Image (cartoon, rainbow, N blue to C red; front, side, top):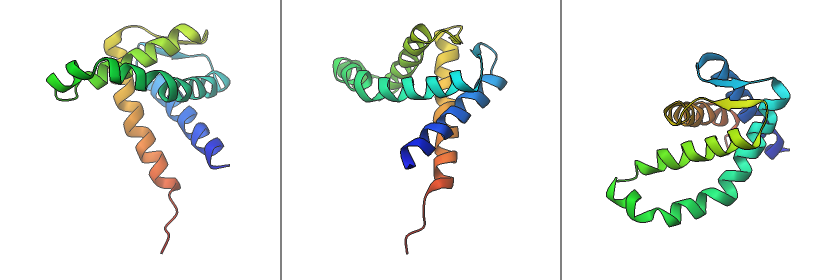
Amino acid sequence: MKLITKLLLNAIAVFVIAHFLNGVHVDGYITAIIVAVVLSVLNLFVKPVLVILTLPITIVTLGLFLLIINALIILLADKLIDGFSVNSIWIAVLFSILLSVLQSILHSLLKDDKK
C-alpha cells in the first residue's frame, strides 16, 4: 500500500512540474502515473550501472555529474513513453532537481511519527 501511495505522489509531482515547467509535456494523469513507474524502474536498474560506469567523472566533479545522470534517466523515459516529452537535457536537469525537491516534500508528509 505504501508503494502505491509513493508512486501516486510521484505521479502528482510529475504532473505538477510538467504543468508549470515549459519544455516538459505530460498528456494526462495516466501518463504521469506511467512516467512515475518507468522512472522508478529506471532508477532501480539503470541508474546504479550508470553511476558505477561514471564514477571517476563523478568524483572529479564532486558529485555534480549525478545531475546529468538523472537528466539522462529522464530523457530515456522520454524515449520510452509516448505521452511524455522533454525538450532538452537542461530542461531534464531542471526537471530532475524540481522532481527531487517536490518528492522530498510530499514524502515527508507521509512519514509516520513513531514515538
